[in-house]
Amino acid sequence: MSEPTPRSEYLTAREAARLLGVKIPSLYSYVSRGLIRSVTQPGTRARLYFREDVERAATRMGGRAGIPETVESAVRWGQPVLTTSITDLSDAGPRYRGRPAIALAQSGRSFESVAELLWTGVDVPDLLAWEVAPPPPGVLDSLEQSARHSEALNGARLMSLATSVLAMSMSGKPDFERGTTAADAARLISLYACAAGLLGPRKRVLRPEGALSIAQMLARGLLAGTAADAGAPAINAALVVCADHELSPATFAARVAASAGADLGACLQAAIVTHSGIRFGSGCDRAEDLLRGVRSPQDMQNLISSYVSTGRQVPGFNPVSYPKGDPRARYLIELASSLAAGGKGAALPDLPRAAAGAAELHPRIDVGLVGLSMALGLPRGAASAIWMIGRSAGWAAHAIEQRLAGFTMRPRAKYLSPV
Image (cartoon, rainbow, N blue to C red):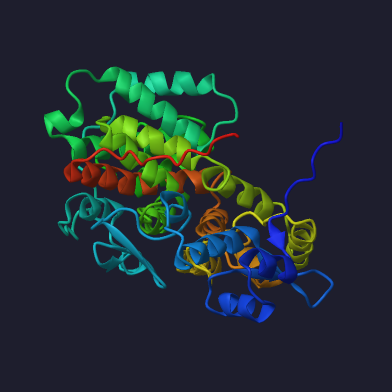
């Protein structure tokens, strides 16, 4: 029995128009408004259209035509399904409680101060590091031992292990009964930063001495020698722009867990395993494999052409939330280029920019993180780890907000009879 042909990620203009139930000129109007993304078809003047965008537009059109919009259509990048005061999305990127994330990063604001802003709404611009006790030696020993028995370590596995190890060392009431949610979030994020050292050149958990920022801990675990302190500011900037992004799937998972009464560690664990899917954390690793495997802009263009011609989506490109390109990715790529120009990195930060020009693809934040990681000389897997550690601040903020909302997230299902 032959295997079924994989479904293409792209549609021709005729296929897209038929799915939408419109004429081809109407399809072009959707593209011009940024509702549907397209790429050039290698070797021709024709264009291909992203299937997921066309299907989403078709769902929305069904709602406007008089069919009641269901939860199913709303959660497919549809209408808002929850109210939040934490983050909103604009063409210039996310805004944390009204403050543009990229502007916060450019001004040198510490990741810690941004996390506190997300958690409490209080702006503490002079906060440089959390005053939390370093992880107990027993916890670090257990984490290191558990990691030795885990194959193919990456950011998601390390953070999942760290959450489990710390949970086993804690007892008593959950954080929301003790009133320690923010402190526990800082403690968990600090442990994640220590765990990232297992990806670094020493393959050891970082055991910090004295007060260090999360960026400094990551830099010392992932880099060696004087490069560590020099790389900390750029890592801090990456953490800041990664800190939250409204209701991503992982954030939604954290809120569902919080609404059910789970403690903070369980909420973050739900987010971690969701983010590790192929469209996010693992997708970042795939984008890294793509970018680190090429040596010239021509190599990149050839690789992209091979993806598009076979109907596959290029890892790390064309974000759904930013049809014209993710401003966070542009900021990180520019930061990577400045590091290389200043002699601080020996990577190839111009490759993401070259890739963005090929087939008119726009980079996602994955590509920006990988470009910065390459410029800093960070090991494989570091880009995804930084993304998830930064986003942990947002996951904790949403868990807090969901608890305050005081309701359980339990959407109804629309049953379809098999007969």
